[in-house]
Length: 280
Image 1 (cartoon, rainbow, N blue to C red):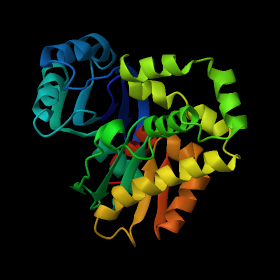
Image 2: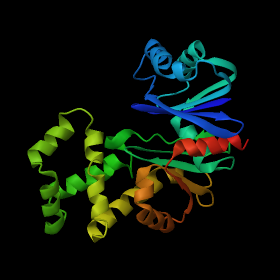
Image 3: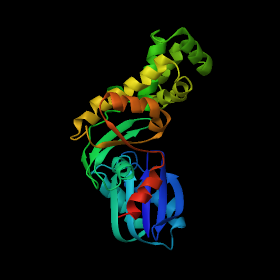
Image 4: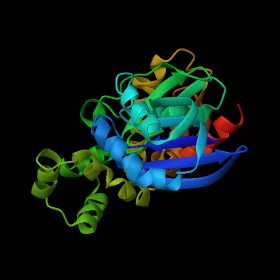
């Protein structure tokens, strides 16, 4: 049996594969080794995963997670091996590699994540070749939900949006400029707060100003990240994340204007990773 994990900071989705079929799915809390100690990860696995897999012998485990850098990978591997019966490989890798394998399968390509944050890499069909640091929503994360929200709020507060859009914005969210500034500069998780405005962009995507804001943020993502990867002119460029799915049309236009080719857009990483590991 093969156990797969797609882990973020808030949740981990698990998939158990038997005879090349997904036979069980589970969800536990996130297991980011930058945010949790080894003991805390062990306890989470012991309490919430072991009862579901108590009599299962695993031939392989592939754990793709946020925060799973080369230095932190041994922490997660030790926690998994301490609690599960694993007879073979126990691979711990970054969530970016998981996304790349899901998006590109066994073929070379460029894989991108567009969610609350953004990320990208070039991929050789098995491993990451190069990764341009996303730098977070203040210095980077172009095309992400947080940056789209940041651009929208900035344009509204700087009187760059039409009167119609500005009025709709304040009517919908019932926030004062002072409250917005407090949430962004003084409260925790400003990236999540800014990303919460993404549905407003979707609702108003037929407005030329909104459409241009979204498309130009995607073009910025492509120019500042994807163009650093060798072969970007010819390789398929695929995407994972809700932002890519929701804004497919402006994304397609941005790719075309930059001379790039769309690969695959996936919204369910687990299904795509099952496909990768069962087609080896």
